[in-house]
Image 1 (tube, rainbow, N blue to C red):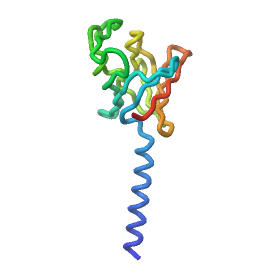
Image 2 (cartoon, rainbow, N blue to C red):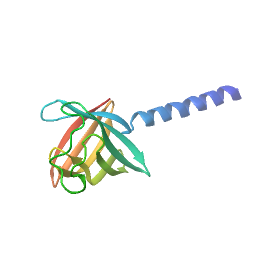
Image 3 (cartoon, rainbow, N blue to C red):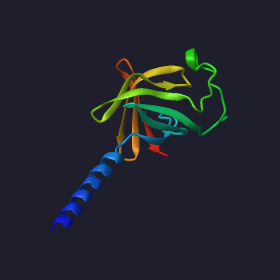
Image 4 (spheres, helix red, strand yellow):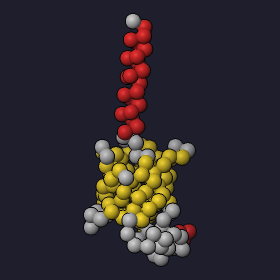
Length: 140
């Protein structure tokens, strides 16, 4: 009887852990342009010291070694591949959020951001004031 109880307890812990992990934003995501529907890049989202970051690890079109010609400030002259575009998001309930937490290298613009997972999709909502756009990124 004790062995069955242990097995059931272990199974319960495994199911809870798998469920929690499946809703994580951590991993590799294919970014999809919400205006054209085209895949643009693969972003690796990772957690470090309780905050979330995202780095472009692959470009889907154009020169994979291109320099960000529109970027100014500390990102001027950097390669787009390897660029950190999600910076220091903090967990707030089911969302990861940050003021000026996401960078668009094509527009040289930082946006306030909120990201969350819905199944195999990642919702990425960028804000400027009360205006926002939401992109859907797909699990890579």
